Length: 120
Image (cartoon, rainbow, N blue to C red; front, top):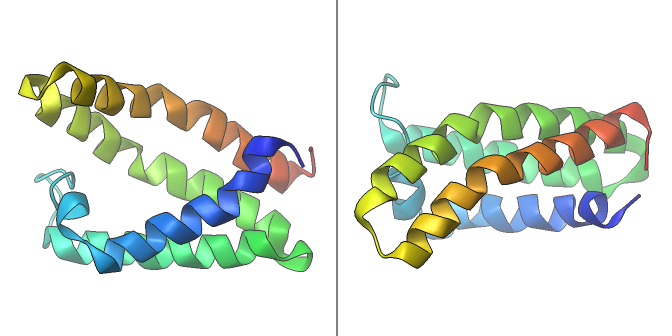
């Protein structure tokens, strides 16, 4: 596995845990067009990230983890776009972070898909 692929499990584990430890920042980037409460999406995505991390962590389930990671990264992409829109009036460095997250999804999705396809 390459460096990005190796980093996916700990990144998903950390992000998943943060959804429960400090959910407010995640709530704030749930697009309001979605039905239901933002907190329910925060917790659901936290569970999905923790499950994905667990799948990626072991060789036997890594292929399924790659698929789950690619799907999850694609599913949360709209939240990253929404965050970039919300943060247009924030300080410039926060704008750069929020805008940078949008294209960053592409190499992450490709790395996850590579795990699923058995490429490293």
